[in-house]
Length: 333
Image (cartoon, rainbow, N blue to C red; front, side, top):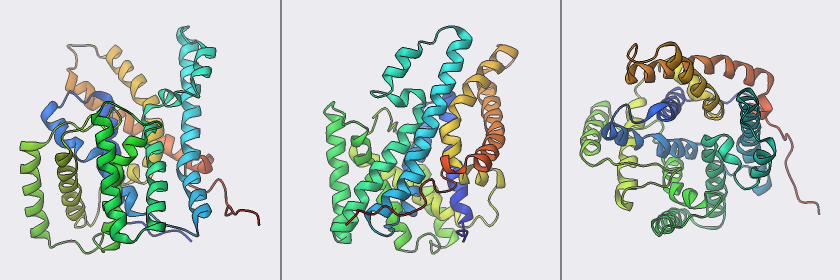
């Protein structure tokens, strides 16, 4: 049976992934201040949206099976695409050391497809949250998530990292928990009235304008601990409440959002060749930096549509559109 989708959530996911693609094209073109404001939405909201649909499933092994199907299998698949892309690109330009690339895989596989750090962190966040939910009461789960985020922040602030991205997973926990709690409290369908949502959004924009600063989770760049959570949570909730009143979300954005995992895993191999091609065909001063940015973004998103169609039609089990492992995992008695 097909799950009923919430249209405005796909729209929010679409906004998220478009911001990710735009950031990877050229985040400096819009200026540091506006970029800082948008970063309050970008990755924190992605974790929030993932937390909205957290489920315990039928025990730990069934839960793990779902997360392997939806996160680990696509991660491996998109890494293999990255390895293939790097191999072909290197052979074309005669600068690819196959042996060196192959031997670097165990220690640093994500360099083949950098955006996949998010999927690794998301898997870790799901496992941590599952264990907290399973063994702790609800209020203590929330408190524990906040404590873990404080520990993760302290670790990064001290100049240390916990691989593979475990410190980032700890810092991402409150955003994920906020999503889960929002669904439990009915905020997906019972937000405030429209005038309150608009007033809240205006208040949030003012706060973001004066206080927003860089948040780059993959590079472990954060503001102070208080602003790290206050500003993104204000931004996320204001957008959530406003989007509930969108009766007909923009279909293109919603479609990209529905298959955002495919766009996340493939856009790196689209945008760089497109940007290089446009730069060679239309060198400065034919187009300026902003025009190059917009044209690259539009062409990249346009090419993602046939990529989405192909992968969901012919390789759905590798892109989280169908289950790769279709039976529960149980420990033999």
